[in-house]
Length: 316
Length: 185
Image (tube, rainbow over all chains, first blue to last red; front, side, top):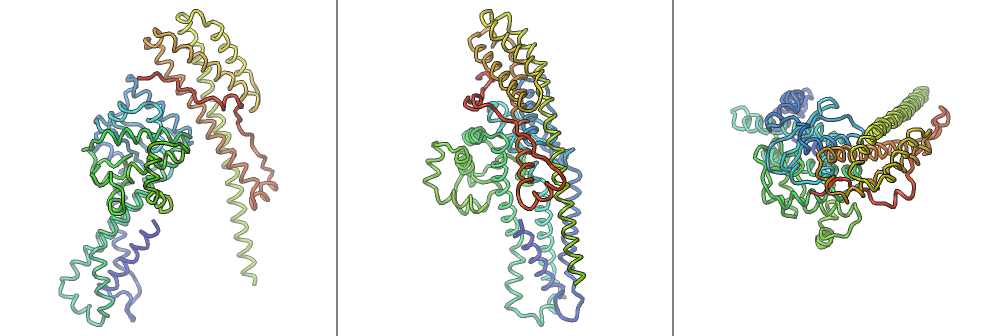
């Protein structure tokens, strides 16, 4: 996360240097582009933020619980249990009628937190596994991941704006004048970096999101004292591969497993890792089994991939 | 020179205030967590007579076990203090577990929607009690640790913070795996 902020400041500074002459002697020192882009992005994101999870929820087609249905009552009970275990207030609960097993958490403060579960998940999981999934979502709430991801999208938006300005400024007639007097050895790499910055920022955002997934898994195990439930839930979801069409790229990071579910998510390795908002399911399962101290097929497989697991632990 | 002294006093003041407030907040959260457990326990007390009434007709040969649940319930309701109530609650949990195990022998019980509903209610209540205790214990551990580690122990002693009591579970209950009350689907 710190890397992300530093990266943003660096790109902002670079744009200021290249296009606004901010750091040249004899001009007032003010990183205009950095401040302005951050302002724009913050405004756009915060409107969405305070509009709150409700926009997201309605876009997903979430509906309130019907306590007459036994499965819904069980869900309500499980959420109550996890709210107690984590010491937070009871979140609002919604169900999305969709066969794909998945869950998500939104909301920005204690009053408007909401947990959302698909009917597919309810049908597939037993009580213990549902508990694991709900604990994971509760962990996202308690770790303030929604807040964090909002900050991430502000920075992401800011960088996009900066890169945009930079590209326009480059073709405008005034830039020729600005370029003179600058060292090309500094200028050319900076321009390239600015051009590629939206891509790099997106990769960084993915990395932050993956770290929070590992953290939420660990926190969930702390709440339930039963990492096995969550591990079984992940195994079931892995075997029931099904994309969740209502989710979009913008809401993907909110979910329990990556709803877009491209084949890249199931592969293990450095490149696949870079491109996904969620860690590979296989590795999450292996880590949970390791927390439980259990010998299992997953752990055996994990030993074969020992190097990868080690990286996951030290890297996050 | 005078500036440095003021700075030190300022930092000290901030530290004292934040430590004191942190400890007080924890103490209040512990009290609240304790009340949460009470709420769940009360709910269990209310549910037990219901359960006994419902299954009594089916379980002709288990009247002793049911009677024991009723006794354990009234003992638990009368218990005072953290330790005594912990023991009484453990006994109640165990006797309830026994009833649930016996219920497996009566297929007609599983067919009754009433019983299933009650069972789900009791399952969640049992879990809620367990999780509320777990949270309580986590808070108490945090609170007691803060009182004993340097440097916050200096202030804890000065302001008279006392360590809280953990909710201990008897060895017998620990040895048992957590009872899964839900019926297999």
